[in-house]
Length: 146
Image (cartoon, rainbow, N blue to C red; front, top):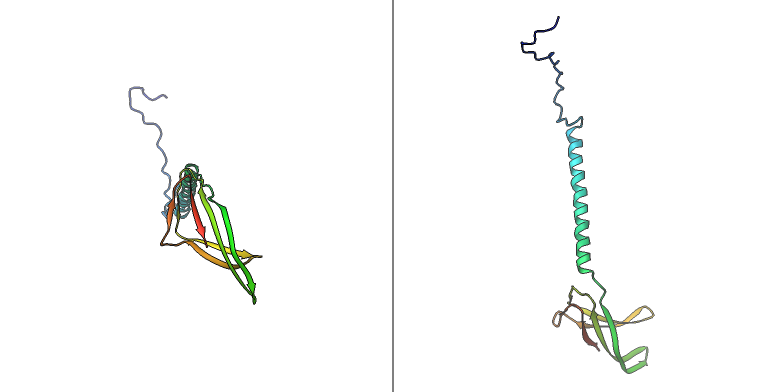
């Protein structure tokens, strides 16, 4: 027999699903620990990608080039080897060239070293904190060392 069409019909009743005990917080069958680990992992990957993008952007904007030293003149006025001691007087004139188009270089200390067969036999401070300077983009500056 068919139900009467003028009456309200709500359909069959839905059976109740038994509740599971609340051990931790379950999210789609995963525990809290694995859920937090997933969030931590996604955050770590996002930070690594963001850091890589920042470095790439700075590199593209700046594109740093190596600065170059050119020796223009070298004078050796004294060179004596007496009693296992070397006495010499050398003057070096050189030019420092900054080929960067967007970056300047600050010289806080520049040291000239004299080497012979890998052994250092002299060094002199060319630039110290007293005469430090900034070399601006695409420029050349002369220097001298005694």
